[in-house]
Image 1 (cartoon, rainbow, N blue to C red):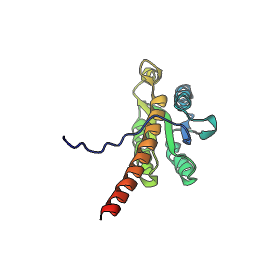
Image 2 (tube, helix red, strand yellow):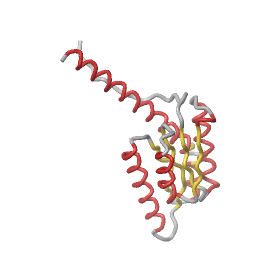
Image 3 (cartoon, rainbow, N blue to C red):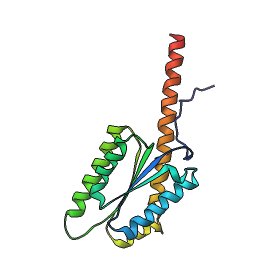
Image 4 (spheres, rainbow, N blue to C red):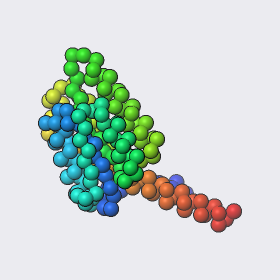
Length: 172
């Protein structure tokens, strides 16, 4: 009989979890679709409407500062970030995309709360449309699934660590 490693994995059950969705209003013809996809996914996964907070910010650059405020209140289990950046003729797209991505990643590490990344960075409007519910599915819904799974994974890891700690205490 071979031993198997302990495996930790999150589930897609949002029942009883609290979520914030921080969404950019810029390119709202895309971000509104992402928001609808995220909310629909959360509700279909067991979340209650009352456990979903939507925070609308002017643009993608403002997403990290709003996430900081939401996480500072310690009232949600996960944050879903949604936005849409479409490449133009200047370096503005590159600067904003890089800064938003970096800041969101740093916040997830600093607060130790799952933050899913649903900020589209596309070359064309057509690509954004495809990712907001057309050919490529809805990336807002995918970001919601990632947030749910990460919360459940974090909780499984915490429970597993406690269980291992208790086991080592009992034997040692």
